[in-house]
Structures are given as structure tokens and as C-alpha cells.
View: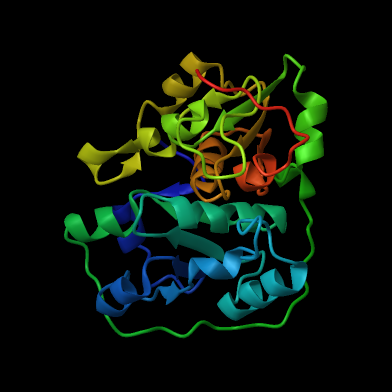
Length: 270
């Protein structure tokens, strides 16, 4: 799989001395302290979410995101490599955030630290400090995000699809994590982990496009993706971007918002 938003461990290793790279580690803090990609700067994932109930996964305000971007030293000129230790959830959240801010210069390390460590690439343990900057950011690409009301307006459109990245139990309503269980009417359920290849150290599956096409999540549609908190669906958003989807949008309200609103339409079962 080739994409300007995807890099293999061997290709990153060959570029570790490149001063134009910013490598962002979104792994567990304890793992970062033990081993990480040389030169990587650690960012706790909770800096990328608002964190307040009832919708903890909502996008933070611009001031919080500006602090993150400035701390990491990210601007439009650097290439930003993202990885985590869970197959792409937090890396995806960072990719979605950067898109929202009009910073499209991100690239996902395929398989993250799992592939990097298991395949024997060099690691280090000392913490790295970023080259922080002062800049102003804006929500330059607000179309990367979709609201509850926008989804409701498009539910009957044949050109629109909802990609539900939650587990089948959450989708059917057997597992309830908000006031109400179930799914957005017409939503297509494809759990996020289904696109990770466990035989290839959690890389994105080579047949990801075929899987999406077979479910009707095709490139020509406007797609909103969500889960419970836009964590799992940040990965699915990122996969779609890597595959060249131009009309993928992340619903950061996700089921925490939809399922706790008594007015939103809900379906149960398959």
C-alpha cells in the first residue's frame, strides 16, 4: 500500500537523521520511557480531546490545540510522523486534528511501535524535547469534522454513509454505553480492529479498500465515521485518508452525544 500519508518502518529508519521530520509518539507514557523511535517526542493522547462529560471525545477549543501544535513545533513545512502502541487510534486522532487545522503534512508509521519493535528497528529510552514554536492556528479545514445536525440532514441521501467503528455489540444495542444503545439509522458497522493485520504487526490491511468497497463505504460517497468517543473512529478516518478518500469526516460527538440525546433517531439490531 503506497500513500503520501503512510510510511513503513524501514523507510522511516532511513530518514531518522532528516531535520525536517517531527516524530510524535502517542504511546503509553511508560512504554515511551522504556523504548521509542529515536528522536520521537511524546504526546499524551488526552491533550487531543476536550475530556469533559457527557462528550469527553469532543474536539478541544482552538487554544488547547494551538498549545499542542506549538509545543511540538509543527508548521506547514515539516513532515510529521505519527505512531502509537495500539494500531492507530491515537495516531489517527492526531491526524484528524491536524487535518482540521489545515496541517495535512502528517504521515502514519504503519504498524506503529508494535511493528517497529517486533521487527528489530533501533529504539532509545531517553526523552526528547521538541523544538517548540509560537504560531497561530485556525480550524482551516472544518470539513474534516461533522456535527450531529449535519448527519441528521443527510441521513436520507444515497450519497451519504455512516461508518460505525464500534463493536458489533454496541452497534446492535446489546452493549449500551450511553443513555440509549443501538446505531444511527442506516449506519454500516465495521469495527476498527478489522482493518488491522495481526499477522503483519498491526499494519493496515492490504485489502482495506476491498473491504470498504464490499460494504458500500466507497470513495465516491460522503462518509461520516464515529465510535463512542471518536477514538476508534479516528483510526478509521485516518485509514480512509491514507486510501485517498476526500469526503471522509470525523464525528467527534460520536455515540456519547448521539446516544445521550433523546431526540436523535436510533435503530436496534443488525
